[in-house]
Amino acid sequence: MSLEVRARPPAATLADAVRSSSANGVRIEIVGVEKIYGEGTRQRVHALSPTMVDIAPGEFVSVVGPSGCGKSTLMLMVAGLLKPSAGTIRIGGEFLTGALTDVGIAFQDHLLLEFRTALDNVLLQGVIRRLPLASIRQRAIELFERLGLSDAADRYPHELSGGMRQRVSLARALVLRPPVLLMDEPFGALDALTRVQVRHDLERLWMADRPTVLFITHSVEEAVGLSDRVLVMSPSPGEIVEELVIDLPRPRPVALGEEPELAAYSKRIYEHFARLGVIHE
Image (tube, rainbow, N blue to C red; front, side):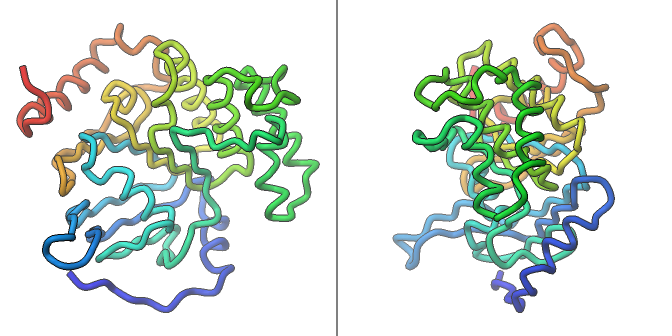
């Protein structure tokens, strides 16, 4: 497939489309997107097969798959931080041709600045964008209260536990109420109990504003517990082999293992991985 080239829209066009959409989230349309790294037959790495995904405004979609299947590559292309080898991406109806700005991003590494307090790390987005800080500060304080960080606002990252640092990272991603939230293994470095709590916190915060979420994870249970829909990917070159609609009420329980309906969805995903040879008896 050849790369479709389109003229770059004016800087305000994409942002206007995002902000004018109904609800907080916007549609993400991934059409035939493919990624091949390197040049020449010996250096080429086919990371992601042509992929089609349509994410509705305000939908929470998770992608699960083995290491190296192209999950993170897909997210980076949706963020506009990596150029597809083929295909197109539209955010809020506008073709994505550069880095997406109206977005919250969270990675496994919290990426907090050690010389700024927790609160100042969250306010940094407003500082960089030269936005009025009074309302952003109030929003940050509210997020800190909801995330159990009220006593951490004036502390530096090295003074916080791993779970607290990741909560600060989550607050930073959400502070401007972005219409799109992209998350790449954001809980991967947390211990099991902290991971459960932060997952529950994320669901409650997402339900309040309903941004459109693309969530990358290795955890099947985490994907089922958080998502409206789970995309299951094959080994590299990754392709979507199954889409599961998680038709369960919200908020989901904190202890996912106690719910037979959730376990049934997880079992179905594990069965796919067994058929693909990703896991073995």
